[in-house]
Amino acid sequence: MKILVVSDEESTYIWDYFDRERFRDVELIISCGDLKAEYLSYLVSMIPVPLLYVHGNHDTKYAAAPPEGCECIEDRIVRCRGLRIMGLGGSYRYSPGTHQYSERQMSRRIAKRKPRLWLGKGVDILVTHAPAYKLGDGEDLCHRGFQCFVDFMDRYKPKLLLHGHQHLNYGRNQRVHHYQDTRIINAFGYRLVEV
Image (cartoon, rainbow, N blue to C red):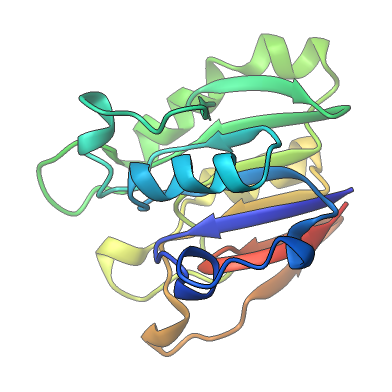
C-alpha cells in the first residue's frame, strides 16, 4: 500500500502543480500536523482516498474550521485499509497554548489507550506531530521529542512512526530513522511511503 504523508509545510509542487499521475497509486493520506485546513481539503479532493490527521502545535484554527472531508484521529485508534493506526498530535510543552504537552501528559494519553492497544494487539502505524526522543528531534525544548514514544515502540512495535514538527531545514536533515522493528519517517513537506 502506498501512503502520502504530509506535515508542516504545504508543498507548492502538490498545491500549485498537481500531477494526478504521480499520486495515482496512493491509497491513504496521513497528515502529521501544522498544515492549513484548506490544503488538507484540497488533497482529499484531488486524491479521492481517506485522509487521517493529527494536530500540530500550530493547528489552533482547526477547532473553528476543521479540514473538510478528513478524519481527525487525535487520541484514537482507527482501522483503515486493513491497518491499525493511532494518532497522538501536539508537541512538547514550551509555552502556554493548545496542542502542547509535558512528558507526563503525553504518557497519560497513551495510558488511556492501553485497553484498546491490548485488545487490538498494538498498532501498525503511530501518527504523531512531535518526534520520539533522540530519534530525529531537536536540541531545543520546542522541538524535543517524547521518551514515551520510544517506550511505545519498545512495547507495541509499530511498523511505522510518522511524525512532523522537525523541519528538515533546521539542520537535522535525516528523514528516516530506525528503532528496533519500527521505521520512523519525518513527514516534513511530503513523502510517499510504502507499507
